[in-house]
Image (cartoon, rainbow, N blue to C red; front, side, top):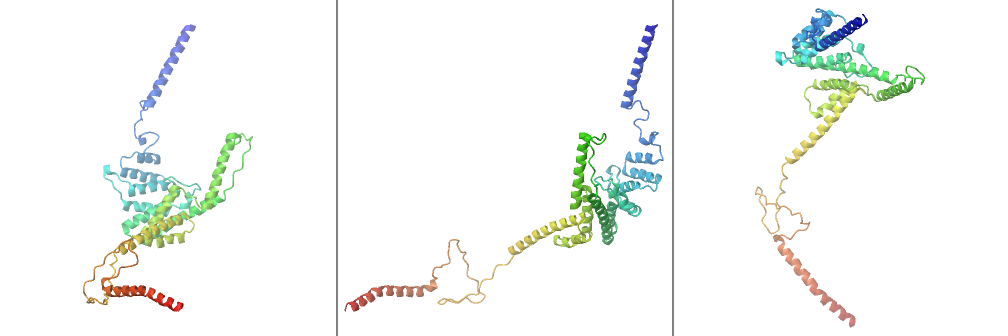
Amino acid sequence: MTSIRRRYTLAWAAASILVFVAWTFGVATGQGDPTAGQAPSGSPQYPQDTFAGEMALAESAADRDSRVLHLRKALSLRPNDPANIAIEFQIGIELSQRIDPEHKQGPRPAEALPVFEHILAEYRHMDYYDKRPMDRSNSPQLMVPWAAILVACLDRKLDRDSTKARELLISAMEMFEQTYDRRVDDWANEPPEPRPRDDDPFRGGAIGISKWESRRHSWEQRKKDAAEGNVFGPLEMAIVGAAVRQFGYSFGPQQPFEVPPVMGRVVEMFPGTPMAKVAEEHIRRASELAEKDLLKELSKNVENLPSQPDPEPVAEADGPAELPGSPPAPVTARRPHEGSWRLPAPSDGRRYYWALGLAAIGVLMIPLVLSVYRRRRTS
């Protein structure tokens, strides 16, 4: 009887192990789940006509317009939610920038413009403030000022209204100024974390003290960055740069020497902020380009200067004077080895020989004068 029970137990255990292995293999390969391979909306977890279901359908949509359709439906199923700003911003990006060549769906800026305008009217920028720099494009903290920049760009493209675009860009820079001022204040006044006790069972010990030292170093770095005004991350600075750049573009095409006055307005409106730093960099680069262009223009003008006019002809003592209007005498280039002296011209021949004769007579008269002088002294 005991052997029969033992055999039955072993058989039951072996069968259970085989069933478990078969079930595990089927789940891993997707064969054990009848809903595997279906769209998320077809599973009980994502029923249709729900927010989660529509978001899943949007993620798996085959084309751009279908994705936008499901995102709009998801918004209607979750009204008045502050997190909807991310969905609205995605709809605006899909309509204004996404291109689906396979389904021949290009950008539709006229349809994207009211989406971004609704973001500006419905949401407040500082409601999404975070003291940490945001380097994710889907961060709600960036979306309101970013929407203002996009509205300015789309409005200039559709309506050619540069004045309205400048106002929107200034409002975007004001939002970034609010974030900058508050983050500088938060970092500068952040209290230090006290050092944990060595015998603390949760935060002490060698590992706990090492983590505290790392946090302490980050705190000191934030204090230093706040003092220097470096509180924005790379993505935030890129969006700030876009706002400043578009502000300059709103004044139309400009030569390098015209950039400093325009960028100077940004420096005056937002002194000491990231916007001013970007504008000052534009001024520096434009000044360098303007200086190079000026030097190039001066060099070009010097090369194109007319040759110096020949001096008026002067009549020589023994030669005929040149008549007005006669062609100028050919000018021979001076050789490098020639000095300031010159050989006498042929017209100076008579004066040259007279001087040579007088010098010879003077030399011959010297012995005669000396002999006469000696005779008088001896007598």
